[in-house]
Length: 467
Image (cartoon, rainbow, N blue to C red; front, side, top):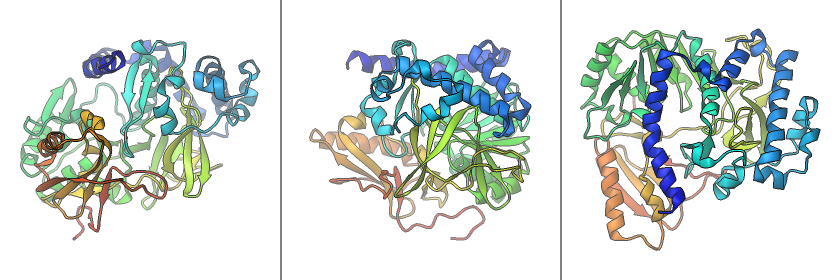
């Protein structure tokens, strides 16, 4: 391993422990001591925040954008090389016009030249490294300061506060940060959170998990929609109740049927939002009983559309990230942004809005129990990239799963067995047959994506629906 790889390995080992310390500190006092958190928190307290047509909001957005663009042109190699603008000439009055002089950037651009996007003002060895989920392939590596992460937390805290959730709330967490190996106990209490491993949401573990949750008495549930769907189904089928003050959904697109089902089972208000993994956009989710829409916060990022042959792609520019600014970043999510939406009938907001997301279709696998398994929880070990150039999980029969791979020249039978055993350890609780299928290529969708999960001719049904 070279020095960079060693550094990343150390970071990835340390960051979970640092995250625990961070949340512990926040329970003693909120992160208002962070100047970026305090700045974001102050802006979010403005009465005009829900109306992008207000001059106050327009001026703040242009001021934030102007500052970001100037800094990027002065300190980020990629923009210095590819944008023909004098940073001294950028001001709030021409910030949006200046933004459109920047080129669109893609995940591939960043993955091919990651250091070109890191500001020279920062030493990356003192930054926090985050990897996006990589649902369409290998994730994008991002570098941030702790202050920038604090700012992002301020926006999420503001969304959750609409349901009365604060730092003192007891939270049931179902998500990636709760995952443990299938041979370990699935529930862990850390401070005021009960973490439940999504891998253990099956008939073998659910009775004990429900008992743990009831003993914990959570105020709120913070979950992937697909995980909560399994939990809610079990509660309904077994006539058990779980009273909470609210539900906080994240990290996956939520469907109307799920929202209706959660409302039926929990009878609690639900909060959900859109946020690209690279955190360039943040959209408040609204559900009118039939359709889901997302209102984009103008003080988090600048949203625009890029029209190509496949539709309207969402393009975002974060207003808070200086260590590695992503300017006009193509999210690979599709949905047409509507300007001038006035007084949403659900929330009353007047912000740029996507009335329907076209490009975030989630694919669910069917387990041997007939339940759904979230594609987000299907993963591979990092070492596989040394031997495989591409991969995809495919299901052709309920309860079975195939890992399709494009092997590199150094791929051996020993490596194949290592990969297969790792997948069996991870997935055998839910799937009967797990196989590796070697391919010469993994087909792309018409939008140029490679889906992590493909389900062929399987009708995945929601709770309460017959198969």
